[in-house]
Length: 110
Length: 116
Figure 1 (spheres, each protein chain N blue to C red):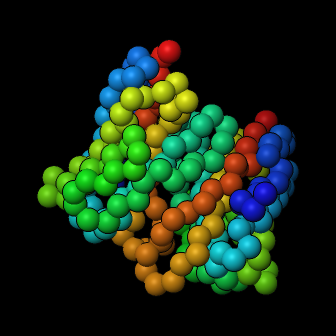
Figure 2 (figure 1 turned 45 degrees about the vertical axis):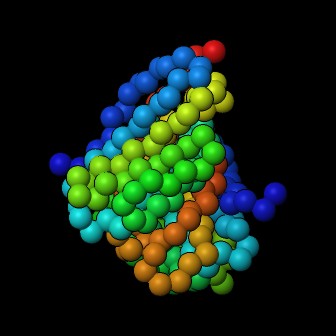
Figure 3 (figure 1 turned 45 degrees about the horizontal axis):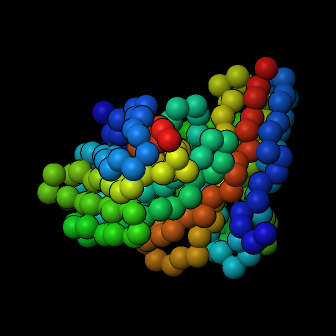
């Protein structure tokens, strides 16, 4: 079993929809949780970084962490075609190496 | 451009040849990481440096792989006697951190390796 599980999709939604992306994890030692966005043939770029359980909002993006359920989510409001990318969750137990999910490929249709 | 830069962006080689990738991190960053990403998968940790010291290597990094970061600046990743299974995107990232937190990693655009 992988330490971090993420549905690879693909996920296709109309422009303006609310998108929900999720990851589950098995290792309770993970303390820091991140979401990265990766466009085709580019490196990942950090979207959200959270430490504690709860919600963190940044513009149209909201990251949610539930440590008791070992479950994290990323919500995208008012989705735009430019949000079309692969979204990767990543987790850190303070060991200087991130563990990534498989990535969810998202397409926003105009 | 003050981001992480990687060179070459794409390398095509024949099985058995050696290849070397270079990474120039963000100048003030003390940590440098190498990850490997295969198609449809998330990046996997290979190794990381704190300044010039290589502090951890994944068991994914066989003895055909070697990484260096002389003088704590740029880094090179060399793969000797390449195999078709080495075909992947090799991502470099850097961060400015101390202590146990990995922190925010800034990734380069990657070096794509194709082994024929």
